[in-house]
Length: 125
Image 1: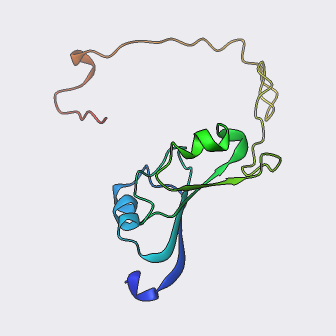
Image 2 (image 1 turned 180 degrees about the vertical axis):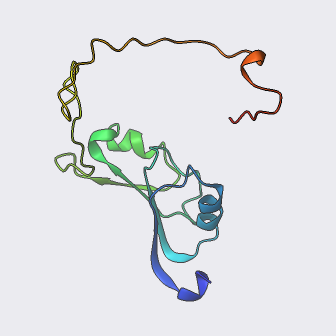
């Protein structure tokens, strides 16, 4: 169905979280295909299939070095441009949303054992 549309460009925001998206991307369903960093890592798909990887200059090594880490041609958005909006929710000691301090929160870390999973339970990795 997608191939019949004869797209000039097909952009995949992320290819690392879905094997379905990965398989679609390997089918070369458009004249030009590009991906970006839902997760900052190459798709691993040969450049003849996935033409471009779009990243942010401030998140990469020097271009010549960074480009060697991608199978696609690396295209960088300028580092002076913020390409993802981030609004802090904490100043490190309290919430900027409701003003509540974090000093009362205690973190505990444990380990799992076979007894932690019920016989009729499921374990997902």
